[in-house]
Length: 456
Image 1 (cartoon, rainbow, N blue to C red):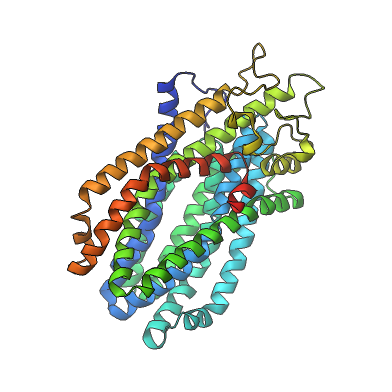
Image 2 (image 1 turned 135 degrees about the horizontal axis):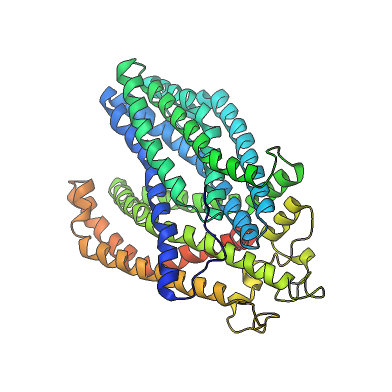
């Protein structure tokens, strides 16, 4: 399949805007399509009765938490692939991506085995019993085989994003949602398999999505003459690259749990108002997350281009970053790329030390004839930040204007609505800042600086 040319970065602001949107809009579609799986399952299982729906609620919480812990597979493969692809090292970039897919498959098999074997005990630990517990366990057993496919979807999506292709994941996500609907209808109602049929349908759809996303990666690897066998160094590098992002994910989950705990202590009405606010925040976050995906891919590509320019300035500069650091001292993404290539990776620095973090810094080669230096990096930083803050401001204005009426969508309880409105107004005021935070999150991931994100 034809991938975008990383060296075709437009100089004009309108051209860069178009490029950001061409990445962000399909990414938004793919992000929105993911929750459709749970929505479709809920709508269909709900017709089986309250017990089945309660079991699905519990099982889906366990599954989404499990899957969410491995989202680093998408982020780490995006950063590494984009960095190497931008530097013109297509073989190494694809090799890193293939190893990332293998790691996802191995982790998925392990997670499926643990979840399948431990489902009854996990459900019991959540406090469920009787028919609800049996329904939850049945769904987990049926859906666990789909975990390897779901994690492979993460990794393959990351590879394609690194190749500046967000359209293919969008198409596959939409196709997966349609297939999931058809399979669930057939298994639930046609074969009368109940809640287990819903889990089996979702697992099948996830597995087929993985096949569809891996196919273009395999074709690209074959076009470069690459084999598909995993490399021990590559698997280890992928895991080390992802561990800081796993720490970040766990920290965010802990913060969410702490917020729910605080809301619970205030009483049922406060907890219900929190659910209303959190649902709306999560929905608004899709737009900001899509822009972060675009920033991640573009920053990774631009840094790869900068690395290539620095390496070509002369033998004395080839092993140095723009801040005078050696490759041995450079960041996670560069180090991982070096392992994939089995050679030193020039310029694998982390974002805070990168000259783009201080525009105008004296960077070797930045003003050299024929070299763009840090100009493309600075342009992506400024333009994506403007999009993030601007989008956050628009969302905030809409949220504030609609805050008196939005709670009616979720509840008829006047006390809950009264508590939710002030929370929504506070959320609205924070949206521009959230836009900046999401964008910098994507920038740091694109620069391969997962350790900074984990510490933050």
